[in-house]
Image (cartoon, rainbow, N blue to C red; front, side, top):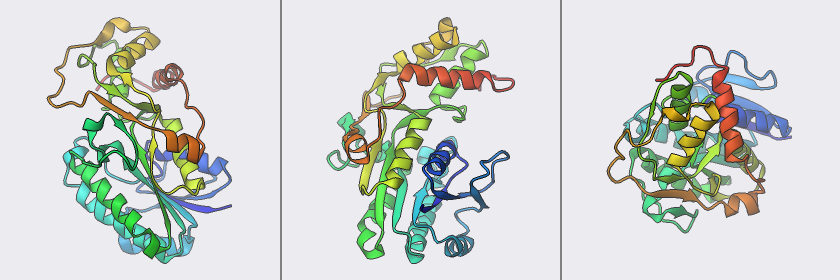
Length: 304
């Protein structure tokens, strides 16, 4: 059994990933600014801001993790171009070095499709150029490239789970799927673009499965965490309307498509499937059904 440290453990991706690691038999030390009110009793929780470096170093010395999964980052509204990406990049690099100092032998960092050159369409790990168009993508790429380059000097395996587009229970309300679901369940029209864009969307539990499997594997370098096939946004939101029983509330074309919007962003998932060994994800329709059902159970669902 390995001791795994997880940062950002109370977040949208962190919660199901921690469960996956626990079910795989790991001892999990979860780091978050605040411990969830109803967290899994199997988890060793540590309330800590990742920017508090001295406290972080003391915690790592006490825990001495064999493996680590770094998910923590600020993805508040406007995150793509926020200056908050700079302190997060700095704290992430300090974390990488501090982990090596306590003998951690494997680190998986949460990368992002924002690291890629989106004009490529289909993104393949080491083949598709990295050319971020946002500060978020640039900061993530800087952390991941530096950690990967330093892996030999740090005597630590480095893997990067490049997460694409995701949705599911607990998603922040401002995101596309959550916004559309909440709108139609509240009886409000969900304003959307024409939806011709093609994106690679994956259910959050499948994202968690991919990241947990990557922690358990010996694969290094970037690995796309995605479905591996695209869906038109128009088809995705139409499906949400059908599942929720309110197809007439899907407002395709109510919003202008932003200028310069890439037509296709899809992942090649051969490494995830063939090297990490992750099974087929949940069918998209079933994942939408589970997501809508979860939102129905939330009190006073309103759009916003």
